[in-house]
Amino acid sequence: MSDEGDGELESRRRHEATAGLWPIGRALTIAGTGAVVGLAAVTVVALAMLGFPHLGAHRALSVGDLLEMLKLVLGTVAGVGALAALVMNYRKQRLAEVAEVREQQRMLHERQRADDDRVRVFNERFATATGQLGHSEPEVRLAGAYAMAGLADDWTDGRQTCIDVLCAYVRMPYESDPGPDAPDAERLVFRRKQKIRHAIIAIITAHLRVDARVSWQGHDFDFTGARFDGGDFSHAQFTGGKVLFSEAEFVRGSRVTFFDTTFAGAKVFFDSARFAGGAVVSFIDATFAGSEVFFVDVWFAPGEVCFARATFVDGMVTFADAAFVDGAVTFVDARFVGGTVSFADASFGNGDIDLRYVASWEVPPAFPHVDLASPPAGLLLPPFTAPCVKEA
Image (cartoon, rainbow, N blue to C red; front, side, top):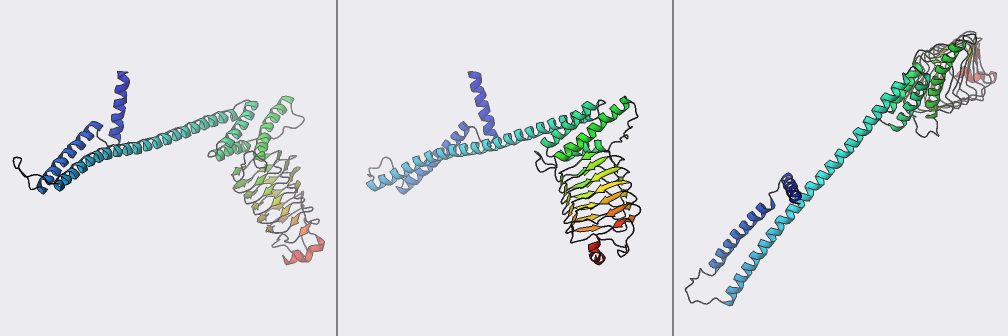
C-alpha cells in the first residue's frame, strides 16, 4: 500500500513538473506567506488611518473606526481565501490542459502506431503475394494473383502498385500455343500458364465494371508489349488514367473482346500494336465517349477487328499511319455522332475498312490525303453519304 502511495505521489509530481507547476506544498506556503505580508500591510494602513494610536492612551475608538477596521480585516481574510482558491483553480486548469494535450498526443501516437501496423501488414501481404506470383508451380502463381488483387482492394494507397504487378505479369515473355500436335505434357504446361494470364485479365476487368465491389477505375493499366492469345474485357469502364496496349500483339487465332466496353475520360493507346492473322478483336457495342484512343501505326494483318454497333460520341479516336494490310475492320451499325475519328495517313492495302453499313453518319470520320471521290479499293464507304464524306 505504501509503495502504491509512493508511486501515485511520484506520478503526481511528474505531472506537476510537466505542467510547469510547483509542488502543492510549496505553492500554498508561498501563497500563505504572501497573504501574511499582505495582512501586515493592511494592518499598517489601518493604523495609519487611525493615527497610530498608543496602546496606553485612553482615547476610545469610535464606532466608525471599528467598522472600518472590521471591513479591512474581513476583506483581508476574504482576499487570502480568494488567493488560495485562485492558486488551486489555476493548478487544476493547468493540469487539465496538460492532461488534454497528453491525451491528444497519446491518441495521435496510437493512431500512428495503428497506421504503421496496417502498412506493415500490407507490406507483408505484398511480399507474400509477390513471392507466390514468382513461384514455380502455376497453381501457386494463380493464388498469388488473387492474393494481390485482394490486397489492392484493401490497400488504397498501394492499389496502383498492386495493379502494376498484375499488369507486369501479363507483360512477361509468353510462348505461343504449341499446337494440337505437341506432346500432351507440353500442351498442359502451356494451358496452365495461359489460365493464369486469362485469370488476371478477368480480375482486372471485374474491377472495372460498374458492379465491382471495389472499383479500380481511374487507375493506369500497362500492357505494353504483351502477347494476347485471348482475354475478355467485356463491360469494362476505362475512365481516367492511362491504358497502354502499345506494341501489344494479338496472336494468330486469338479472340480478345471489348464487348460493351466504355472508353470515357481515359487515354488508351494501341499504338504500334499488331493484329496478327486469324486474330479477332471485338469492340462490339463499345462506346468511345470523351477518351483519346490511339490506333497509331497499327498493323492489321489477316484477321478481323470489329466495331459493330460501336458508338463514337466524343473525344478522339485516331488510326493515323495505320496499315490495313489484309483482313477486315468493320463498322456494321456503328454510330458516328460526335468527336473525331481520323484515318490520317493510313494505308489501305488488301484489307477492307468497311463503313458501308453504319447506322449513323452525323460526324463522319476524316480521311485526309484520300480522294474520296475515288477511294482506294480497301476503303469501303457508305454510298448514300458520299457527298457528306467529301465535305469532311
